[in-house]
Length: 446
Image (cartoon, rainbow, N blue to C red):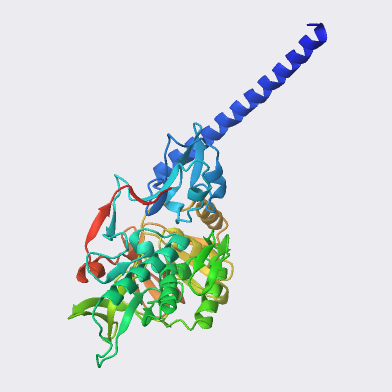
């Protein structure tokens, strides 16, 4: 071996060592950055998941980072110590992109942890509850992912059709009734309605708000759908990384094209059983009879109210849809979660915005929202009142208590309240549906 060969091997060896050292240093830096993010998330309450979340099996994970890159919500996942890890888990809304992106099937989608169990209705593999004839699909059953919610709604209707076909004939009855009442017009409800129409089942959909259910209340531009899905009658819906607006426009299109029977702004107060029929009692007292019921409602149910004088008013709302149409007004936003922060941020450019929060600092909000609200506060674009609670709302003013002292704020044109939602637990229990506390329950696995 001459000196030139020795030099070639030496240079190659040095090059390899330099590349390896740089890779190792970058790997360590990335791991340290993720560790700091995890510690911050744990301190601020963002680490422990609130609903559906990805569970990473450390024995299968190879640290490819495919899950991190696939997630539309940033800083939910990261790489630490050569393995995937959860970071800001409260930001996860169940896209499921990480689940599909993992090259070694190391991710399962779960709900509930040992520390924080989640109350869910107990359902069978065909999505029927313990009450024969009442089915559950979508977010209420733990699966918020749009693709899977649609598929669950379809599967539930298949089960309903089989039960109706095997039951006694009731077509000769002399009162109006449906084969199926669907409660909720979100992804599961729409999928169910399309399948019911395809199977020639008589059905009606009741939606307490607007078409789209929970999706309708998401912030403008939010990515809500990341994978194609098969829809009865229509075929494959080829939508990837679809925004809220695009999805709602599509649903409006199929609603008109297939003449789906959806009654918006109609709340179902209770469901009872009379003889062989379910009776859905609407707000106002009207009774709707059906052979079966599919509950395709969100887990949040109805918006939580403050229960203060003056809250029932035309200038008090619990969601913000078209922020661009609101201009030159003094607005009070109530709440400290992502919904309240995002609403205040959308309103700030064309209005004078106040934000009332009962705690001393924001917790469990997305890191990007935290950065934006801090910047808005520093720029005096939003006036935040910490340690405060609304006590009374009048036509153009409100009373607010801050640190034990009650004050009156004049010339308030609108009040937006984001105090979370009331879980539909009582509604379900009154219908006879059994509930269970889910801890590390696997909703979807390979």
